[in-house]
Every structure is written in C-alpha cells, then in structure tokens.
Image (cartoon, rainbow, N blue to C red; front, side, top):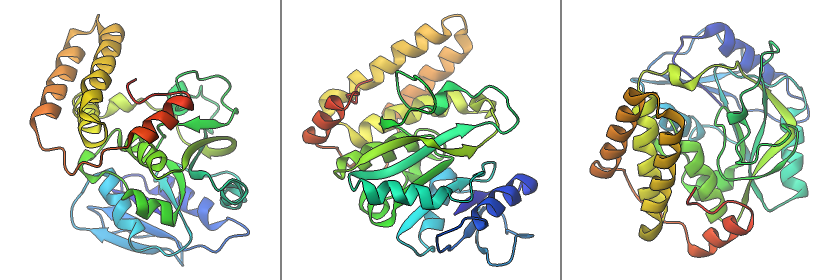
Length: 281
C-alpha cells in the first residue's frame, strides 16, 4: 500500500507503477489519501480517502486494514522499487527463514547522490549492502507477514511522524521474530534531509520519550532517553536553538499522553542485547 497527501503526483505514480510491475506475486494495491481524495491512478489500484491528515503511521494502518494478502508492503509516495522481483525476493527471505518478521531493503538515491548513512538502521553502519538484524527501520519501504503486522498492533498512530519505525521493530522482536535489513534488496528514494519538516526537532524528542514510555520497563526509560539526550548535546552543542527545541520536545514527551503502553519483556531485551543492541541506546 502507498500513502500520500497528493502533493507528489509524479513520484506517487512512479512508486505505484513499480509495484504494479512486480512479477511472481498476486497484488492488492491500495493508495491511501491522507486528507486527500486519490485520483489519476492506474487501473486496478484501489483508493481510500481519509477526511483529514491523520499522520503517517495512522495512515499506513488505515491502508493495511483494507488490503488482503499474506504479506503487507508499505511504500512511501516518494519511494519506488527498481526490481520487478522485489516482492517475490522479499517473500523468499521470509520463507527461507521463519524467524524473520520484518524486512527493510537497502535504500538508494536513483540520481546517484550520496546515500545518507541513516538509511542503514544499525550503529555500526558498515557496507550498505551487508544484511543484518536491526532494531529500527527506515519506514519508507517495509515488508511484513500480515500475521506479524497484526500481532504487533501495526504502527504507533500516536507518533504522527518520527520513530514509529523503531517501535515497530521492537515489537517485532517482542513477538519472537527478528527485524532484518536486507542489503541485497533495493528501494529508491531521494536523499533529502528529514529536518526539512518544520517540527522535526520537537517531534524527534517528544517521540523518543514516548517510545520509552510506551515500550520499555520503567527502570530503562530514563537510561534510554538520557543516552539520546547526551547524543543530541554532542551533535548540536553549537546549535543552542536546536537543543532548546529538542529538550522542550522531551519535556512534552514526559508530560503528555503517549497513548497505550505495551512493555516489551525482559526475555526480548535479552535477545536484542545478545543480537547487538540493548534498548537503552
């Protein structure tokens, strides 16, 4: 499924065409209009118009509710998949390794621009084409078995924007599966700065705190938020306005309703730690 506000018609069409070109799979394609009535789409694409912009994760959830299939693929409206066997190859990963519960591909800017390292969701980035277990995901192109998606409760609608991919990966691990970065699968996306969003710094901080409150045992919450606060100070100590906005967002995260909680178990925390990343950093 694809999610759009209708502001990028050419990119949306490119992404949907790349899905319709997939070989070896049966497709049920839905475009969700987040505060927009989708139009001008290829024949065979179903549409779902939401009366207002509910935010990215809630829009994705709305689309997943109306598609049918054993797997669900989320594709942003400015992303596309260059290989016509992408979905077949992704499904093959799940079939060969039942421990997998989520797959994120390697992301490549199709213009040849440098690919941001943030697209590789691991601390030790290494080569972009190296596959590994991960504990967060770039949300623009993600594949899950439908039963896993339903078991984890979908995307965290309360976030609106930012960090919903971390929660999704954590909850996949808590469901007894693994989130996987597939370096041999490719999705295309332009290399743009996420800070272009006006409220990026505030939501980055607020949602970081919400992530801890919604998912971590109480004893780990200040450790997780504190480690990220230290990282922001190290990154932005020369940018006091950014830091002020970030800490204001963090304060908002502690004092506002974060939505329902679903604390991950200590066994999951142990599995994540053994796999390379305890959920305190």
